Image 1 (tube, rainbow, N blue to C red):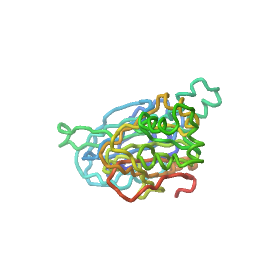
Image 2: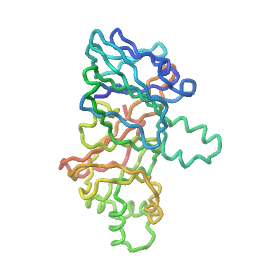
Image 3: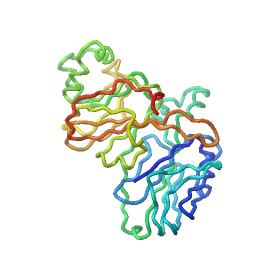
Image 4: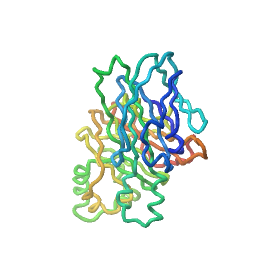
Amino acid sequence: MFSYITLNDSRAVASAKLAIGESCLDFSDIDFGRFSVEQRRVLVGLGIGGDCPRPSPSINSLAVSSQSLFFDVTTQASPYLIASEDKVAITKLVIPNGSYRAEIDVFLDIPLQQLEGQNASKHIKDSFQYSQILTVIVSITARAEWHNHTENFIQKPVYEGYGQFGFMLANLTAMDGFLRKRYGDRDINLIDEFTTTELANDLFDQGLMVLIWGLSSWHYFIFALNSERERCSVPTKLLPDLKGCYKLSSRFNEFSVVRGTELNDWNQCKQKKWPTVRLSGIGESLNVEFHIKRFNPVGGSHGPAYPIIIMWRSDDSSGLSPILEVDIDDAE
């Protein structure tokens, strides 16, 4: 499994040390690129080889470096990170004694909407860094498994900015067919229809749409998992801050992730290219969880929230429970 910590300054992490018993991995041996001198908020994930697939960078990520380090553990121990004289425990992991290879990937997760902001003014571009996350994944493999170890990766998450109208998950072709039968070819403002008619409930009942609304304006990671077992690969908390359940038709396994603000013009919305996710399986229930972390104030103050959304299919029959309001500032 993987265990994660969140820290508010990549400059401190670039000179940190990962201690495992008497052994120590010096992060100054890792290439952090310009982020050793430019501040970014950081997610550090540490995992040991097994059935748990490795994390993947988000769809719009920037690769920084990838390298391997070797080390020995003489006495099994729980790891911790030493950054700016602060000791940050990496919980839930115990590394047995033995010889290991650490494969270290560093990448910058960038919200998709920043692709559309390349022509923005300088002061807007300067603000981009506040939502960019430097992710450091350390995947450890014991010597005995070096030649037989096959890496599996989870699906790339979507990292995007959302607000009051959240986002919609749907097979756009199937949803458009449903809407044409009801409205014909006329222009449709789905935001109005969802708030003044029973359309949203009808789409929920047909399993044609997942709608998550009422989000605090910020940036969210969306992880579509092959099964609940892949929770071990993502930065969840012990308990979610919020849960929901939707019906999702088993006729489809690929879905577009659509910004809710674009639903005011369905004819334009359905023609745009949206990020897609796969939701494998035949279960018609979709479990959704929000996990909201805070950045550890290494060398400074707490940063903004780090919210992730995980979802997976199941045979759960607990009924429809859509998520229509999320205040990330209320999370513990």
